[in-house]
Amino acid sequence: MPPKNETTVDREVVISRTIDAPRPIVFEAYTDANHLDQWWGPKGFTVKTRAFEFRPGGVWEFDMHGPDGVEYPNWIRWREIVPPERLVFLYGDYADDPNAFESTVTLADRGGATELTMRALFNTKRQRDEVVERYGAIERGQETLARLATYVEVKR
Image (cartoon, rainbow, N blue to C red; front, side, top):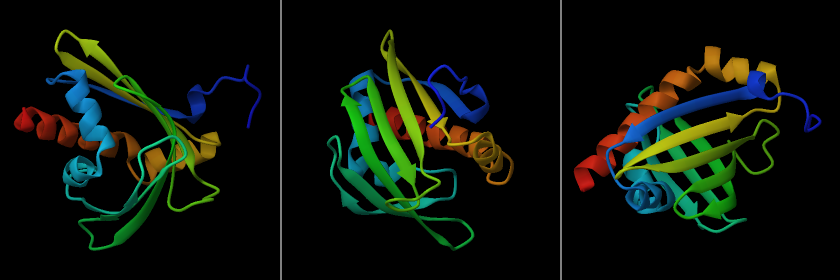
């Protein structure tokens, strides 16, 4: 890990969206497997949870089925949970994935709406650039937040 005084901007992807739903509802949708299976991932993807333990140190293991017909394994270890305002987790394809990255989600109350910001911090600039350029991480992250917004706004 680089020294704390080194800038991380060149290793980050930051995506935000204001969602027309109260913060506790958005937080619940982001932290319950029954909800996550309904909206997680970019347009055209479906999710099937294999394991889910929502606590610091707990793991969410799931498969994403892409529009290309491929199953993509995913693994998250929850590091920090501060209801209803903050989540920090390690995200990779599997436990001990050397390319796993840290993701921080903050939820800010905006007068009955929720401003959700996802910040992914990659190990290297090269890793960050690859997920942005090769996999469309920014666009797919925006699609994911759009799906979350639609999900919670319909459920209200």
